[in-house]
Every structure is written in C-alpha cells, then in structure tokens.
Amino acid sequence: MKKNTLTAITILSLLAAAPGCKTDFDTKPYDKIGEDVIWRSKANAETFIFSTYSIMNNFAGGPATDPRTTNTLGFDGIYGGASAVFNELTDRNTDMGFNNWAAIRRCNQIITKVAESAEISANDKTALIAEGKFLRAMSYFSVARSIGRIVWIDRLLTPEDDLRLPSTANPTETYAYIIKDLEDAIAGLPTTKVAGRANKYAAAALLSEVCLQALAYKNYPAAPAVAANDPLLDKAIANAQFVITQGGYAMESDYGGMFNEVKATSPEIIFGIYRKSINTTVDGTPMQLYTPNVNNDRISQYGGSPAFNSNTTFEAWVQHGPTQNIADDYLVVDQADPAKALPWDETSQFKMAMNEGVSIPTDKIPVAGGETAVQTGMIKPGSTETVWTLTNIGRDARWKASIISDSTDKHYGETFTTCIKGNTTRWMKINGMAYYVSLSNMYWRKGMYTNVSPRPYVGIPTDYHYVVTRLGRVYLNLAEAYLLKGDVANAVAALNKTREAHGKLPAAVVTTPLAAWTDYKRERRVDLVLENDYYWSLLRWGRYGGNANHGIVAGGTIPELTEVPRVMDISKDRTAFSIVTGQFYSSNHIRNFDHTRRYLFPIAQSYIDQNPKFGPQNANW
Image (cartoon, rainbow, N blue to C red; front, top):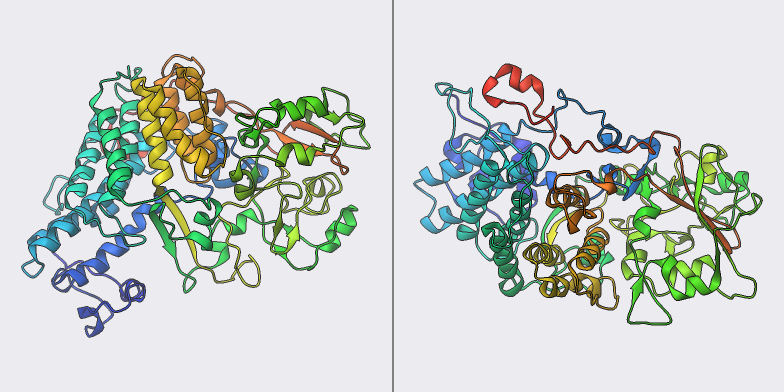
C-alpha cells in the first residue's frame, strides 16, 4: 500500500500555531511526509492530530443551525440553507452529512498508528489514543444529531476489506459507540488545559450532552419513554458534576466578553475553536454576516437620523438578525417586585405605562405590504416611560451583550437607531435605500469582536474564536437531567447559575415541573443563542414530550419550529410599537414540522443505492 502523506502546507500551518515545538519536519523535505516520520514521536504525531481537529467545526457557534429556528431571521429566508429545512423542502435525496468516513479514517489512524509506534512512550500513547477517540466520537456525534445512524468503523480499513459495511440499526446503537469512545477519552486524556485542545473535562462536558441526546432518541421512531432511573440520566449528571466540582472552571461575569477578544480564554470556556489573523479575515467569520452595509448617503436618502460620525464604518452584508421571538425571552426585572423577572410586556411598569392593542397611525408607524400587526401599544398620556425604557431598563444583561437593538449602545463608535426613520432600520430596505440591513430591526452583538481594525469588512485580518462548550452549558445540561428525574429543586438551582451570573437576574423560585421546564427552556435559549444548540434542544424536548414540549405527546409536533418570525417596529419618538408578521421578502412565514420524520434527516438515498447495507431508510423518508 502507498504511504499516507501530509502536505507541506498543512504541516507548516500547524507548526506555526505551536511555537517552540521541535519536530522532524524542521529538517525533512516539505513536499511530503511519510507515515514512518509522522508516528516517530509525540511531537510529530501531534501535527497530524491537530489537523484532525477540523472535526470540531461541526460544533462551532455562530449562526450554525439557529436560522432553522426563530432565533434569527435570515435575509430572504435562505441563509445557510435554512429555508429548505423549515419549509420541509428536504427529501430523501438530501445529504445531511452521513459520509464522515474520511474524518473517521484520520481518527483511526491516530488510534492505530500511535499504538503501534515503537518510539512514543506508553504515557503519551494513552493520551494521544484518547484524543483520537474523542475526535472520533465527536465526528460521529455530528452525524448522529442529524441522521441518528452511522457507519461504525473502529479500525483502519484496507483495499482487501469488504467495504460494504452496514449502518447502525438505530440511534441507540449509534450512541452506545459514541458514549464508549467518550468514556475512553475521559479515562485517557490529561487534565491539562490548552486552548483549542481536548482534555478530560471537555470530553466529560460533551458526554453530559450526548447522554441527553441519546436518551431522547431511545426507541426511535417510537416515543422514548423517559424513566427517572435511566442510567443515561445518571451518566449525564455524573459527568456534569465531575466537570463542575473537579474541572476548576468558573462562571464568567462578563458574558459578552466570552464571545469576542475580551475574554476569549475565559475560565468558563471548556473547549473553543481558535483562529488567528495570520490566516483569518472578517469575511471568514460570522462578523461579516452580522454587520450592515449602511452609510450617510443612504441614511440621508431615506430621511433617517442620526448620521454616522464616519461615512465608511459599515460596509458588510448582514444576512440575518435576531427576531422578536427570542427578544421576548430576555426578561425584565419588575419595578413593583424586584424579586421577579418577567417578559418585558408583562411587567408592572409596562402595564401602567402602555395602552395595548390600539391602532397606530400610519404616519407614526407605517405598515408594509403583506404584513400583519399582531401586537401594538402606545404610551399613555402623561407617562414618562418610553418603548426604550420599557425594553431596556432592568433587562437581562445578556440582552445588551447579545443583541444590538434601537439605540442600545455604540458599535464601532456609532449608535444604531432601528426605529422608524432611524439610521439602520429595516425600512431602509423596504424603501429601497439599502440592501444589507437587518430585516428584524436588530443585529447580533454576540460574537462581534470590538477591536477589528479599521472595521469589520471583507479581507480585514482578525483573530476569531467559537465556543463549543463551557461551564454554563454544563450547568444547563445538569438542569435538564434533573428535570427528567423529577428533581425540580436541583434543576432550578442549576439553571439559576447562568440566570444569575450571566443574566444578572433574580433567581427563579419556581417549584412545579411545568414552571421549571418553562424557565429552563427560556434560560437555555438565551444563554446558548448562536452556540449551535437551540435547534438540537428543541428536537430533544419534542422527543421527551409532556412538560418539555407544551404538554404535547412525546415525539409530537414542536410549536417553536412552526411559529412564524415576528418583528417590532418602533416609532421615531419611541412612544409606540407594532409587532408584525409577514413574508419579509421571502417564505420566512412558512414554517412546517412533520413530526413523523423530521426528528431525523434521511440517509441520502444515493448512499443506500450504492450499498443496501446502509439501509433501511430512516422512518418516512
């Protein structure tokens, strides 16, 4: 057989990221590297392992799967192929990533070749093999979340092998393999914390979530029949507690800083993906898709205000923005009872200040064609409140850290006004003055670096990182496991960790399972938005059913995946608002969820046609 090789460019880029690491690649020819060299030492083997970490890109934050939900409203409904999912336009021929076999071969090379190496020490072998199993588990988990079944390969295949391998029979078999790999990884990985590299705690943190996903898909396509004494729940809790009590991680008080350069290596982050400016530019990050293309000429043409201090600040192409649907989940402290945090339109201050359900004059807030107002309000005469004060004062701290709304804060020295006749409002697009403004009147701040020079723009070099898992997420996994056990007190204590540390909100004090699930689902949504979580969590909760999914039978429809996006318009004087639904230039208003098949996507039929052992096809595809 021919020897496997690594290209010189791959080796050199990896070595550039590991200064001071002396390997054979410092002296060997750079056009190709043979296996006999790669597995000669720990340092050499690590260069191959580092390049295999691209597997973790499947778990990167940023928009990811959020556009499949109403967390974010895609530009013309097409961002990231989301419309094909929420419009139910996928079919049995859609390839959702079943073929991960090249990545798995790399993992099996690590596991096998390190074990065979005569030069790598026994202790180093243990850690490197564990790292290979961690990466193999995560590659398979990325397939399992979408498709449920995998082709399990745990050795290096040769041309002499029968390559017509079978797929796993069901998600339970799939997750058994993934869990075993992660448990092996936990046993063998070190506790050392190196940014962007797995350790014992990263594997345990991810295993706590894998166990929840595995539990949800038991008995698929039948309902999972979750039992409080299920071993998977105990395993989820044990691994979460292991990270919490022994990992040495700490909750971050600067929530927003974890997602930009300020706290990129926060003590809360357990595993992140880190990119350096040497080979990363703004257009290779979500920042390009969070930022509008607006200048003073367009603002003036629209008749908006205020003008920007700089006429060339924003020249990107925003592709999606936060919806009112998620905005409603950022709670506000009630001024009459500061121990309570409520939806912004349920607080005592809102009720006292607002006339609800009134007709808004079109010269104050116009109505776009094809849109319908579903909620309106005008400040009562004599009240000193405004829509701005009611939606900002006392609000969850993650609101300002995650979302740029009307006049919330300066962004690269400029204030975004997204009200009627503002400088970054959606009405600039409606009236043809600007093409790249958010359709939702809000922009993402979470994940925006604050020091890109001179500004976020195509081609500008920048560092960037994605958070894959962190301590707050582990606490939320723990809360979910306790809820499934019926332990409301411990569940609420766990969800309060993020609510208090990140949201700066009063603790939840609910005591009933239904109320606890409601608070938990809201908490997970706002804390993990843009962290590649909400879509998968909705599927998991739908599989559980009952209190986890609005009292609907396990495996039934999921209301959050059929609700339509909502957008808030605010009058220029901030005394009136109108929340609308509509097409928003596309089919964003068409949201379907076929519960008989959409909990898993299909194995692309072309794979089954080539190898019948991959079948049968997933249910109802």
